[in-house]
Amino acid sequence: MNDMTLTALRRRLFRVADRVLATGAPVRIRRGGRTLTLSADAERKGAGRLARLKRRNVIAGDAAALWKVKVGKWRGRASAG
Image 1 (cartoon, rainbow, N blue to C red):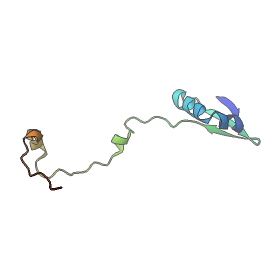
Image 2 (image 1 turned 180 degrees about the horizontal axis):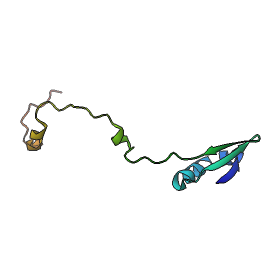
Image 3 (image 1 turned 135 degrees about the vertical axis):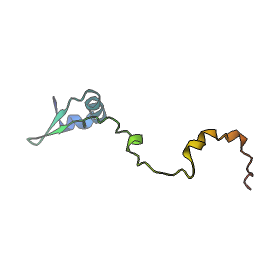
Image 4 (image 1 turned 60 degrees about the horizontal axis):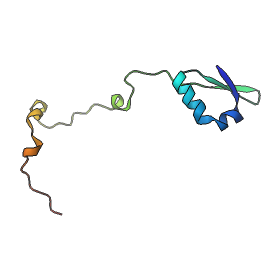
């Protein structure tokens, strides 16, 4: 674990944060005789933005029939404007 002062961290905050995220090695920061630790959360599989989305049932009708839809064959009216 690396040690540094808060002043040193302030000068290199983004580099230090990127290093902690890349290596997983925490950094100990000293300030006024006390210590705090900057560390990365444990990675969670499937915790990306897409995986966190709530599943919704929004298809009206038969979802299996959608594979037959050909967008290029649509003959709808053009919108006015």
